[in-house]
Image 1 (cartoon, helix red, strand yellow):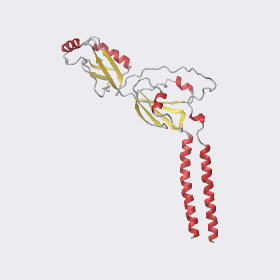
Image 2 (cartoon, one colour):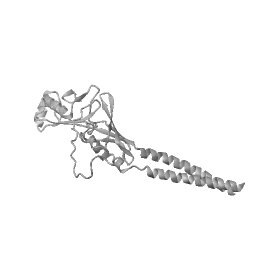
Image 3 (cartoon, one colour):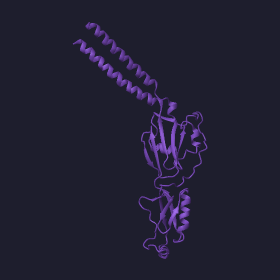
Image 4 (cartoon, helix red, strand yellow):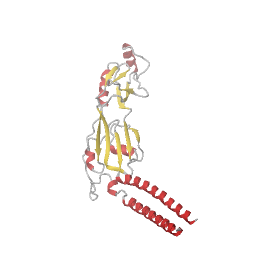
Length: 269
């Protein structure tokens, strides 16, 4: 009777070892192919140069809840002081409009409150257009003012199969999908380059667009350049899903094998 149990236990161990080996072979065979991990893989290696028309950059528009850095400077302190006195302002600075550390918040009405100038509606304008609007107001009080307007909170969020998922503050308004993926440390080998999801706020609704980074056509896409508060999500490919399932099966198989060995040892006692 003991020999019967021993033979069955050994047979069970061999069976489960065979399963583990088979699962390992399945894992190796499911590794991501080179084609799945290459950008712009529709471009021939035999052609030394490709010319691809790039998407036209469109300046992002100022939206509610944006934070803007706004500065107005002049090189004529005396003119500034006289003008501000007549406007009822302070005379202590040659640069009367000093930007708060946190910037100027665009309120729910789409306006910003500027010292001396007052409220201005800036939503729907580019930073260049906002600069011109502020300049028109500033010349009333200042001689030859210089105005600068830029986004403080130009943020892009990158999630999913990238090496450094995070929310990134971008110093320039002209930033592409490739720029931001570079900040995030590139896609992992498990990222689906042919199906990157872009989520964008658009006047109270969410636009969801899928980009194929494996095709050169995405460079021509109107979504090649990103806007503030865009979210990029890189989905895992089938290899990653298969790997996770394989890992779970390996754990289960190992546990069963250990139990089988334990039973074998018990039968020998």
